[in-house]
Length: 305
Ligand code: PSU
Ligand code: MN
Image (cartoon, rainbow, N blue to C red; front, side, top):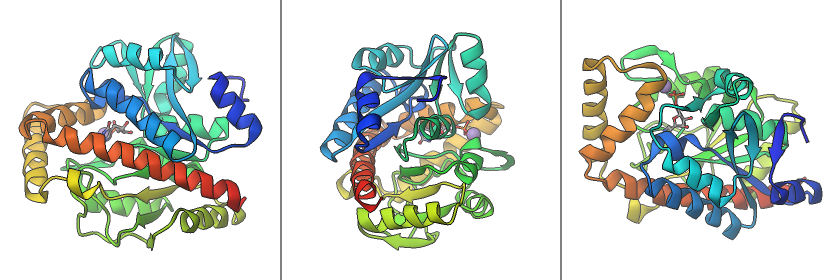
């Protein structure tokens, strides 16, 4: 194990035994959802990973220690501090700061990918990745860069339409990230099952995704893979409602001068308000579903290796 990481005993066991693992992020807990739904969702996602046949490893920084595999108590501790200014949102650039300063930090997609790779975990499940912000072509999430340079497979429901999805799609191409539609021909847009943009390949089974990961490895590529899974049909929102809320939130953020790392948490909160919480129901359902799919891919990959 990498000297900077503090794995839980279950994670250590799984790594030693070579059984499937799925990393999970913690920014969705502290900056993505309110308490107590954030804690319930994080625990339900861990349960979904177990149902899929893998060990969950939720990642965060606690008092400067990079923990891989939070306990339920640690998830509760972070969850209660949702929105607290002293929990640092940790993307790549923030991780060394949180560690050096002994802070608590919640890892984003980029931060979690980085830690997962150091730990030797190939699969990572989340809800939505960061991307290019609407109207701000230089506010590009470090998630996209990380996908370009770290060989981890991220299972998500695409990106929220609070972002500029065509621009996000272009940056993924530039970064050399293969974008998979899991049982889908088009990129899902989080609550909505499609945004009209094509994926690079449609794959319908965990084995097919595992084969792609193995090919990427054998080619010696350093980039990651993005597997996009449409939200479960019964949980998704009408695309018009999701789009209207996203557009209004993005406009208001501009008016109020909210940008940088504060933009995504602000927009997520505003979309929940604008949809009377409907977006949260969809969010919870797709997070669990993505946890289960990532676990199934991890299991298939164990066999493919
Ligand atoms: N999108 C969501 N929910 C989230 C995030 C994005 O629908 O919780 C979080 C993820 O942790 C993601 C981060 O990595 O926001 C992106 O933030 P930024 O744009 O500052 O990179
Ligand atoms: Mn951003």
